[in-house]
Image 1 (tube, rainbow, N blue to C red):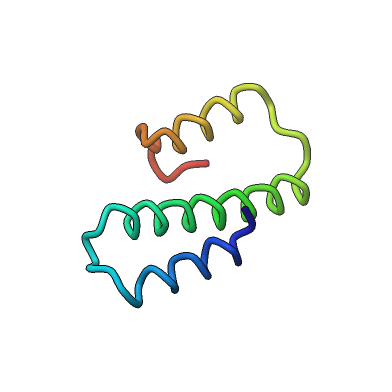
Image 2: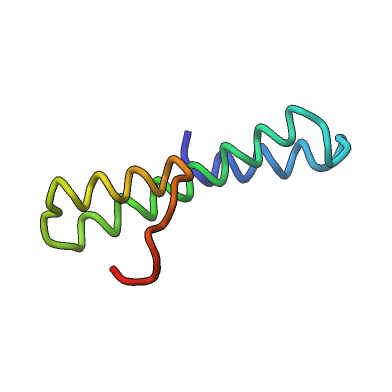
Length: 72
């Protein structure tokens, strides 16, 4: 589903659901993931090929691991 469809889903659920409703929480999470995926796709397309080490570090960040400091 595109991020705009996810946004519409969130908007529709927001009208009738409490902020802690599990469907609304899931829809917001899905919207964030769709927008992040689009950003990643655009960024990767615009940068030179990454090394295996760089890909591993970025994958760790996406999994919520340590950032390794500000030097990158």
